[in-house]
Image (tube, rainbow, N blue to C red; front, side, top):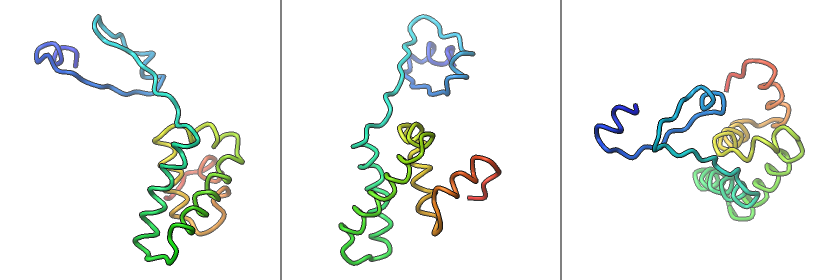
Length: 122
């Protein structure tokens, strides 16, 4: 990758998990940055977008109040779990949690707990 970047004077953004970063040797000219976790307001806004899209698709009457309530309940659920409170700050995991919540009709926290201990079929 470094050869390509140097040959083409290309600007690139590379992402990795911490384990992958520890194994990389970044040459001169590379900058490293850590993305800040999502704030509570950003988590709410992200969830709002997904829940509003689902409400619009299902033609829910009084969608604004319905979405606000669903988002509030969802955030209360994930913030009640210390583990989920940590991972919901990571954008990818927040979107995964939202998707899991939108795809389940039952007890969301039980489904998440089950997924952490066994292979999940979602």
